[in-house]
Image (cartoon, rainbow, N blue to C red; front, side, top):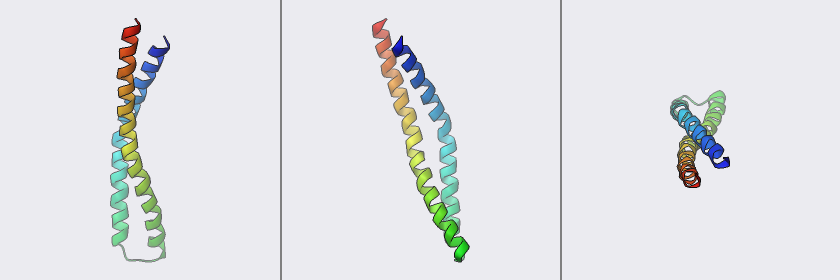
Length: 90
C-alpha cells in the first residue's frame, strides 16, 4: 500500500517537472538573449546594474534548465522501480 502511494507521488512529480521543463527552457533562453543585448548596449550606470542582475538570472535559469528535466527523469525512474516493486509484492 505504501509503495503504491510513493509510486503515484513519483508519477505526479515526473509529470509536473516535465510540464515545467518547456517554461524553464524558454525563460533561460529569454534571459540569455536579454543579457547579451545588455552587453551590446552603450555602457552607463543603469545598464551596468541591469547587466549584473541579468548575469545572475542567466546563471539561475541555466541551473534550473538542467535541474528540472533531470528531476523529471529521476522521478520517472523511481516510478518505474516502484512499479516493479509493487508488482512483485502483489
